[in-house]
Image (tube, rainbow, N blue to C red; front, side, top):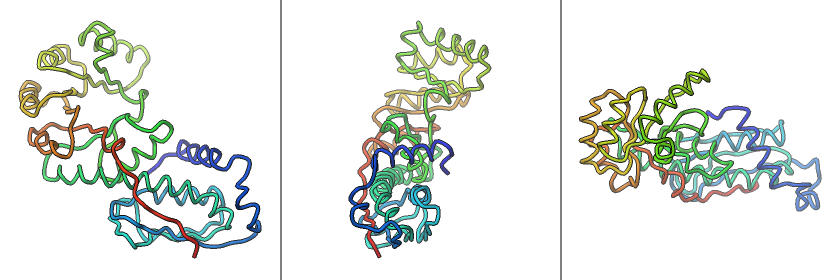
Amino acid sequence: MLQEPAFTDLIRSALAEDIGNGDHSTLACIPADARGGARLKIKEDGVLAGMEVAEAIFRLLDASSVFKPFKKDGDSMKAGEVAFEVEAAVHTLLMGERLVLNCMQRMSGIATLTRQYVDILKGYHTRLLDTRKTTPNFRLLEKEAVRIGGGVNHRMGLYDMVMLKDNHIDFSGGITAAVNKTVAYLQSKQLPLQIEVETRNLEDVKEVLAVGQVHRIMLDNFSPAQISEALALIDGRYETEASGGINLGTLEEYAKTGVDYVSVGAVIHHAVSLDLSLKAI
């Protein structure tokens, strides 16, 4: 479920970008008091995402809009089906049309690709995480699409979790220094944030285990065999995450290791938008 006020702010900003000082195509030829209806037609198979977004866009433009859903977020969809119908001022339908389609097509593509990864993980302990490799100013909806597809949202940004990656570690003087400085900082600021540390080899893992004070260990660019070695060392003391180059072809081998999470940026940045259309009825 999308959270206010960021959700509303995103929609308002996107509408302002598109409408500017007026939808002159509509203003020129459609009476202001005209009302009508439209339906969202599905043109490709996949996983539907963005229904909540579509309804919010129409209601923000016209509080009297009547939104009639026939499917819900996360449903499988087939070409030829109808996702929803909406009745509103014609100006509302025409001003909201492209934004609704842009959001739903993008979100449905992400949800569909995410579901492919999640289906491979069925029966395994491992769960799928997204990343911060998102489109600027569209992260909220891209991560919502991952959730709809069955994935797990990682941190939303730099503010809600500490992740000490390779550059943090190198700039701060090593893993031990980075962790100790971070713990002191969080205590001084009274910030109850979890700490994750990226490791690049088994020696890094051993150093994290020695310093402790973290919540999760990222095993970056480890092979499945190396993941298994690392998990034996960690022995359940911390959450574990495999990252780096994992794809649909290699995912199951990583899941077989028993790692807690795999993070895959590709579920967002490799996703292809699905074809939908909004037509007058």
